[in-house]
Amino acid sequence: MSQPRDHWSSNTGLVLAATGSAIGLGNLWKFPFITWENNGGAFVLVYLICIAAVGLPIMMAELLIGRRSQKSAVGALKEAAGPAWGLIGGWGVLAGFILLSYYTVIAGWSLYYFAQSLGWSFGGYPAGMSAGDLFDTQVGNAGLQLMLSLGFSIGTIAVVYFGVSRGIERIARIFLPILFGILILLLVSALGMSGSGEALGFIFRPNFGELPREGILEALGHSFFTLSLGMGAMITYGSYISRKQSIVKAAGAIVALDTLIALVATIIMFSVIFSVAGMSEEVGGSTVGMLFISLPELFYTEVPFGVLLGPLFYVLVALAALTSTISLLEVVTSYVIDEHGLTRNKATVGAGMAIFVFTIFAALSFTGTPFLSSLEIFEGKVGWFSNADHFVSNWMLPTGGFFITVAAGWMMTRSTTESELLDGNEPRWFHYGAWRFFIRFVAPVAVAAIIIAVITGVDFS
Ligand code: PFF
Picture (cartoon, rainbow, N blue to C red):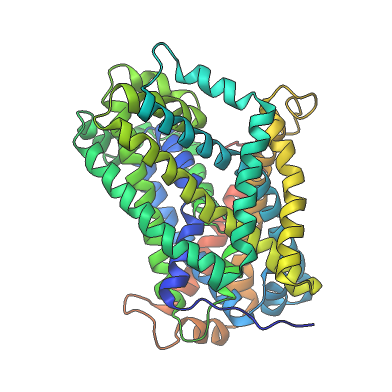
């Protein structure tokens, strides 16, 4: 029983929804941290090169594979490259399933910090309370973790339930402008802080002597994660594009916005951190530390207008995370609809509930739960959550991305991809020959380098 396919109502709708998918915890949580860990400047420059040379061409490839077939990841890859390629689509759907299951847990933390920060804004930051203790208490509370993740999962399911134009696009149209507005406000106040000069220098002054070698792989790996590539999310979103909309323009806008927001978020966070004496030595510990430990306390003890900016910041994190979780659920839902013929309502609720079972495992990873908190599959990764994240980021996304480049660059004919990209609406800066060179040679070689590095034991998650 085939159902008529929903479409984005306009190019802006597509760009906002896909940008919403791309901008997420990767921009606000992972990128600032890995920039910190890799000593700033040179890392940021390498990251920008990876985004332009690998991320952008693959973004176009995924969107075109989706638009051409008007099918979700499995059907689209079969149509692009042959029946066996359905397996690669299936690998992507599985990646979306696992990624969503643990991403929801961190997204849930943003709800908690939003509620807490609202409380502090009205009641004052409790004297003598360390943000580190607060974090440990919330993350170790099984009941709270389950409630937060459940709340976020229900929000995600509710949006996807309404479909592409009435659910996903509508939410993106409302939330993204709010998100941009909050970021501008935070940026303006961050630039006024005493540490902003040091922060800008740290981020934009490259010193290649300080870039660790794994930093290059980390930049490349992160460009997949942050652009939602390698698992069919953009293939799925591409399948809702109509012929009238230019893939190249959309891809350019999505990639530019995602990169801009990552940089802005990093400037904001580092300005706050560099404004407080001694803080920059303390935050180095972990990704979690930066977003959920250093910042909350600083908002209330150091930052001008922190009572206002604190809650705003956590709303921002929650909105950014939601527009990403809906795209992850859409990957799985659209697969179930297209390949198994379920209605959207049934597919959304069924997929959402199945994924939530695994969210429970991820949520209990930090609560001292036997097995879930101590599981160690990959060396040095302790707990369900860390192993799942390592598997998806280091193994699944790069391998999926590699095969997508092969499908678009080597399996599809020149005339097919050319007619998809040169659709009469493409912008002037675009050269098809350059795209084809990058997708056939540069991107697969770069991605193969990540895979080889992972096989030989380099860890960059
Ligand atoms: N791009 C998202 C982020 O940066 O947080 C993560 C993500 C979302 C990856 C959706 C993949 C995806 F399909």
